[in-house]
Length: 384
Ligand SMILES: NC(=O)c1ccc[n+]([C@@H]2O[C@H](COP(=O)([O-])OP(=O)(O)OC[C@H]3O[C@@H](n4cnc5c(N)ncnc54)[C@H](O)[C@@H]3O)[C@@H](O)[C@H]2O)c1
Image 1 (cartoon, protein in one colour):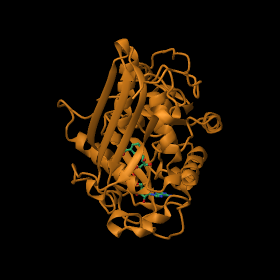
Image 2 (spheres, rainbow, N blue to C red; image 1 turned 120 degrees about the vertical axis):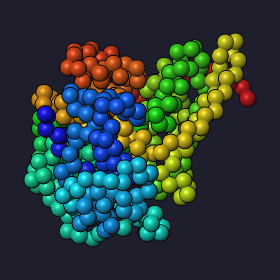
Image 3 (cartoon, rainbow, N blue to C red; image 1 turned 45 degrees about the vertical axis):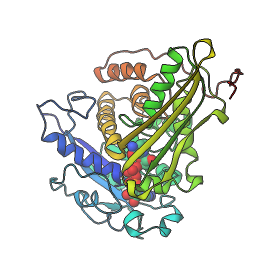
């Protein structure tokens, strides 16, 4: 029997809750046909071969509590699909707050917003070392630039692999990528791409238009939700990196980039009663044969947090394979398949092949890089 993968979590919010529940949920379903996961086995590891060994947060309802209690504490609001959890002996430790908590959180009720514990922060690198963690999953709020970098540095110091689920650019940033390479530590990032979420659907539709010769003139993707992720993103200046990450993820799939005025993608509003239900509206306007107009309107409704956990459960196992193989720095193929802002953007069909080759330990030559920030082509506009 193989040893479990020892995992630490930074940010015990809704995504962490779905992940922790999922590991136990699939433990009870081994050997039967399983829906909801992409890979039953990665390098011999199943979804339940994950052991949580450390967790960090800043909320007073989570810090000092066991992980299995903290994931159900407010303001978490994701679906509970696995309430019975084993006793983990993992007590959530106080992380450094830094820029993790947006000021406007104070204007919202306790049940809906973060409440800082105001405790002396733990030494994250030391806590990672003493826990025996092999992989850290970073689930901090969008806009936590300093805090995410603090955890990333701790990973470098403790030589722990990082799965960066947040749009703070590390794996896709040359100097951070180099730091991970030099330290001999693998990283998968940045900004988790949900299983069937707004990003991958929008990317697939963009490719469909291009592959079928339909010119895309303009598009939007509007998203609403009622969890703390959406509440946090009401502060516009925390949103910059998320908008870049989501927009570039779609732009990268187009043969010709759209002018910035013709593409609008981002979290759009916080609707408290939606809780962890995220609703996405996509509109695409294009031109087909003989310049005939084509319009597409689509609505996607998902449970936001399990949708990302279904991807993180794969990323953790890929990080473990990299550790076993002595690979360091950004893992290009898993990052391209699992993340919105990888070091190298690929078409999702190619990313899947490349990722499967990585998992199998096969050589796979990645195609030439898509030019980031390529020139916007001058194209005739459709008259209204
Ligand atoms: N489908 C998805 O849900 C999805 C997809 C892509 C990316 N993400 C990103 O993943 C991240 C986590 O999402 P979530 O829904 O779990 O968010 P969340 O708001 O539920 O959880 C964030 C947690 O981080 C804690 N926190 C804040 N500052 C901290 C600090 N300095 N140190 C430690 N903990 C801190 C909060 O108390 C909270 O428990 C977000 O950045 C989100 O944008 C989520």
